[in-house]
Length: 165
Image (tube, rainbow, N blue to C red; front, side):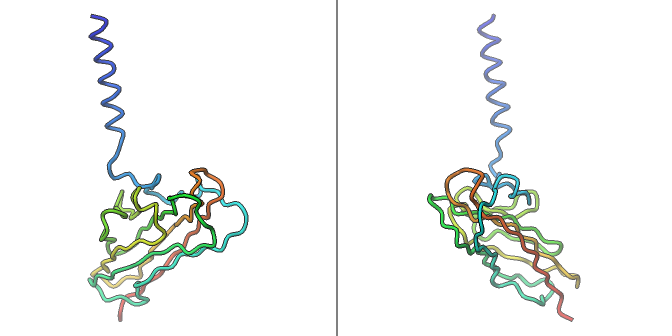
């Protein structure tokens, strides 16, 4: 009887643990949020910037734009992990075009665990049908690759896109 209760207890603990794991969870921790700075702490001055190619200053409603997001930094990684990002938009739709390295999680586009080995990611943005000003918010990390919280570089950028008149 006791052995049966122990086995049931172990199965429950294992089941709850597996339920807590999310296949879509983003980071190397790929956290689907804009709180990168809570774990990644910058030490010293590093030259780091977010570069977003393909985003128009003026969009055509409903058009899909192919984008390339890069984290350009003087910080070099000592390991495989290079960095990560999170992006969200106030209008239109972010679209995954590289399932290996990017994913949508809670309406936030972010890198996958495999994608944390990069500093450049590709995805698309579909402009909204209504003519509204749109903000694309991006937070990115250039990681030093030591799997620690200190010594990384975190930055944020807001890109504004206006509709074609």
